[in-house]
Length: 528
Image (cartoon, rainbow, N blue to C red; front, top):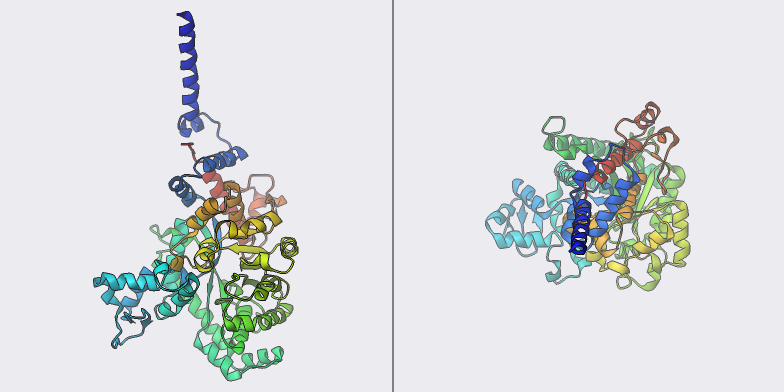
């Protein structure tokens, strides 16, 4: 009997210990002295993350609240959801052809009908959504690649005059995902630049061609483009009610712009657009007043199309020409968004390398075919040594190229020490967001919480925003000496640290991210 009593006592005691261990973390936190964020908070968040890795619902809820830094690879028009384009087109009285599902300007002549008709015709509405996004693309009769690139021509009419709305929608969504920074790719100039380039014509002498464009009225075109972009930002702020107590959280998202170059255009147009990107980003302030929110340029359009493939080497020469004259301008390049069935094997062997070495890319978008490059491991070491970051777009690579899971080279980039960060590419078209990119990273690439956290930090470290970095080592993330006396992200930085932060927009963003991580990791995570 006494033996049984002792056993019962032992069981009760053990149950009490287990109950204490499984008690809500709020109880544990309440008995813990107030301290600044420590490695224990970070480790606890990692343990919780690992405990829910197999539960997509809990994992999604965790990742939605996780701070994510910035999105460095996102096309503005592609960031807008189809439903928004339908609404905006209907407000402008625009038309849609029910058969080919392309928008057009009014008046609506048969077979086109007003886009507004879709609100009373559920089949038409659904067909439009499918046609201008990747929803149900499997039933379109096209490959994911072909359906994706056909989308932009269908809704281009709806993008006219909607830059402010697109900025507002994208900022609001970013804030809901706990992003604090975006670099949005957009085309700053319209048909006027193309008309000028076509009138000037092609000239193999780049310096002479540059002067012809400048003499032909390029500065005036760029001034008008800057004014339009500034007006769109002002309108965006009104749409988000910035500056009032009821302001949308999107007002806190910092948005900067990458000037797009359409590499499928005639070579004189491509040259003019590259020159435009350089000048708007501050290549020669004495010649053309830069726009402070245009921070770099990138080449866009399908990499496997005929003209981008034919003129690839020429485009690299153009970039090299301008980089030699204006090395302070940032360059990010789509490269390696290719797989073997799209192009001959020989065309998979050099795009990433040439974009880094000849195009002077500081960041590579996609880089999916890197292991097909000549001497791939040597190239990976070079990218790591040069600190060239890769913008990883998991959803995009899946639906467009069919590359997912272990087929994706993300693990090779990580193994080689190449900096990487997750990005959305065209979240509206792809029907995704940055949270689901993180979810795919966790589920399909087996990324840990600490790896995702490093990617969020990397996004801001490699952002083209001005100022010195908070980190003296952008890979190990050791803080600069001005702020090393306190934990990064502390509520009250020291006077010398605050002075450093005041002098750098980049460092302020990085400090904000660290503050958000401190708050996030201090949450009372309870292992299910």
